[in-house]
Length: 308
Ligand SMILES: O=C(COP(=O)(O)O)N(O)CCCCOP(=O)(O)O
Ligand SMILES: [Ca+2]
Ligand code: NA
Ligand SMILES: [Zn+2]
Image 1 (cartoon, rainbow, N blue to C red):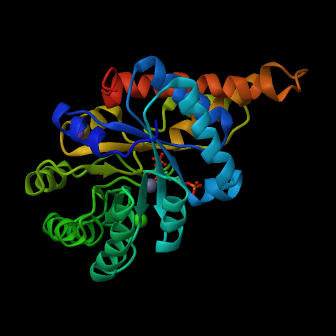
Image 2: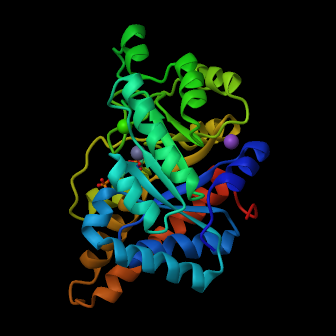
């Protein structure tokens, strides 16, 4: 069924694991993800960005997710990722989403609170949960000094005030991650001290980690081997994700690792099968790669196997 993340996060918090939030853009990506979650008997969040709604059109994504639920019997959260304003959050809530993110992190503290409160009010009246964001995602450059870090990363005390004043259900925090395949110039590093402080000040409150793809080296290498060009791609080591999920992080966002898994498989297949031009062949390889990658994440990183 379509469910909110309320129960999922409560169990994840107590069980010290995290739920995977995977971005979806087409049929094969959805199928690969849900088949993995089905086999692992895992809780699941499928998230849709504004870009995904433009690419696939909202109706297609909604019906593909409904089909996936019907086919697998899974409990799935349908979540709007990075909602930029009240309107898109309202649209998705009216469209049957069970969770929305209102991303006011680029505004001032007070403006972020005001905007988040407006979405929370509309969402809660309709039984929908809300994720907000405080702090700015940016990889830790070696030369980021303390004050810069404090300027962009989530301030633990502000986080407490933000949650109290908005009534939001979960909070995306900035502790050194960033979106995409180039997260760190130097050694990957997350501000775990900051995460521990936020977890201590906000016990039992679900935290969200964005920009959490590992940028799995095997896929980067395969992409580059078969005609791709993504040098220096680097992400969050899996042991850091495991550590974060044992703290207050209950939702881990993964999109880049999906893209790399699918792209590596398709590049390899097309290179090795030049005579083939049936989309089912190479899209099917992409789907298989996604399923294997998601299964790995559920089992070995998120720790949410058999936690459905
Ligand atoms: O936190 C994440 C994923 O982070 P990751 O890049 O580490 O996977 N996300 O929120 C996914 C963001 C994807 C948005 O991309 P489009 O606008 O192109 O659809
Ligand atoms: Ca943001
Ligand atoms: Na957790
Ligand atoms: Zn994000």
